[in-house]
Length: 334
Ligand SMILES: [Zn+2]
Ligand SMILES: [Zn+2]
Image (cartoon, rainbow, N blue to C red; front, side):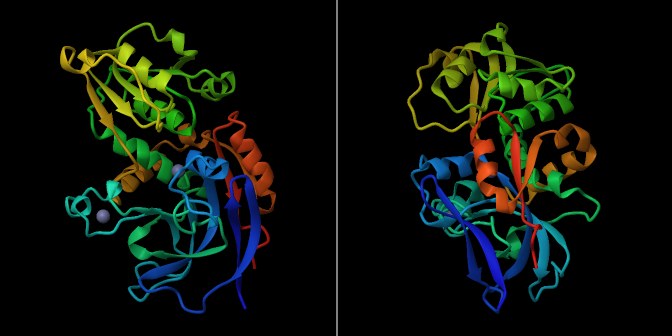
């Protein structure tokens, strides 16, 4: 019998590789995907540390997924061998928000690797409505960035970033890096800050992007991207945004934040919270950017570990010293 090797978290900080039998029939409306690469995301680390309250344990981890179709569905839209990236959020399609087209904030949203079994596994059945085809010639290491980049594409749709606009990015984790790169590609003058020298080091290779500790933000910026998800960074966003400017809030924190509400009223600052993406539009757009500017984005991937070395991969990812860490599932596959 064919088996799938999965990375299971049973409780915070307890992960192990488990072998499970694969069902003989592919689930209804799904294609069976052989996962090749998986990206470790901040939310995976939150599940790992036990700081994501809606996570279920035990669960197979992983939602940033690139692979190939092993067995397609009846529609023939995703034939065997087709390269794909997975949209890992499942919306109910029936709640008031879904009916309004806001599937990303569905009241009953399920997320692979968080609330239900995810894709750090050899084989996974995914609804074909959650797949996007990837051109054969595209490097899988770039393709796996489609999901995290789609988050930024979605956030940026709230504003119009014009050539010459100034953009401050607070927080230089993967999403902060992707925001900085995308804003620069759109013609903005970008300043990216972080409290971690390691993270700032990752940004150093990007010519034209000014980087430094948060106190280098001494001007007012047309757009501020808050990608740190800590109260201090959110507060700083309000301090450094230009009157009439925009704050794009993509960092996640459950903590309370102090800011002067007059920034919103008297200075007409707009605050756009943004979570995940619209599918397939934001994935398509992210794919186009990655195709057009592969070199800029390739450096967001810091390290690739074979699946068998998942412990080192998580250790490296959790160190906060690197950008995107990938797991390679191809090694040792039958
Ligand atoms: Zn993610
Ligand atoms: Zn819904």
